[in-house]
Image (cartoon, rainbow, N blue to C red; front, side, top):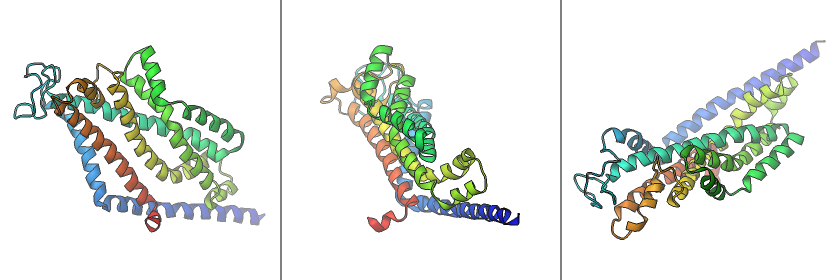
Length: 300
């Protein structure tokens, strides 16, 4: 009667000792991430643009005011110039940044949530659950997000929440595939087998032992989704299908199409903002991937 108890006790000990190793490893990865100069450069760019977008409207002119000269270049009064209606471009850049950044973060959050549920359950349980959830993922993956957004916006009208929902529900399969692959790998590790032998419920093992250890590559994929979502929303706005009540950087590019040769600042500043945000998000994801996977440095 004592042998099974000893086995269970040793299994719990193996599991707890294995999980305790993950803490220092994650702290080491975090130190490595923040130790790199590129992290602070690109993180600083994102913080500056976010601060400008959400705090700038408090100190800039009214973005709807047409009291300034029409198509005036950057000067001391209007630092980024004015548009074809005499509105201050700096103020409109701040308002537009709110929409673009919110779309990127909201779409990434939706993708992460759906991907963890669908990909995680499919990879951990396998069998019928894996087959069904994999087919669901493939169905959404073959739907072009831009085409679906174009059709939906044309039918239901352009609104920022609608665009976020469409992009979120069409971009999650890419992240879900990573979650599924990582869960399939982690479920075969020793501490998961030890937890099963100790009699823990499968859902408890999934939420407390498997998911925390699959998040590093998932976080990297999520950071890349931010840039993809901002580009997709900017593309829709550039085609004239953005939310007219909440202009974004892509909508500013749409308004500037007729003045590309006569008013360069109308396209340069919104385009530069989109470029810097997408570049910074992607580079932070790449740096995070290098920090979480130190063996990649030996391959490069």
